[in-house]
Length: 169
Ligand code: RP5
Image (cartoon, rainbow, N blue to C red; front, side, top):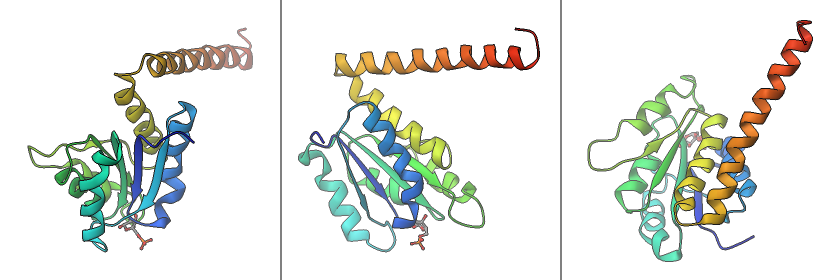
């Protein structure tokens, strides 16, 4: 894989099934990434060290997923000027509403770009990271345009199938 430009981190290995979706999206755009576990609460020093050193290691965007009292993205954003995308993980009995509110409600001055709860959010985190990196890469910008065209084509396809099913085709 190419040099990692995106760092995907998560509060626990139990978040991996969801956070894999961010990795899959990045792979689709040919963007190198690294993936690891670090916790805002269980390993605060490791988390701060990671955030402080990410930029000088060449990382351009950080995607952070956590569940429950989900402070990981916010704590990372406190220690770096890199853009941080937060993915709320539905890992408690509150089904991710807790993680969403904990991740999105940052005080003014420390932004975290928070995406939807769970797998759709993780996918979008990967795409958003690609869009940020794509600002400085014509090749990547073209891949992002193609992605939108593919989405539009898939809707046309669904429309045709629906009409066939309803006997209107
Ligand atoms: C959070 O607590 C993690 O991000 C995870 O979503 C949740 C549960 O972690 P485990 O108890 O499964 O390690 O910090």
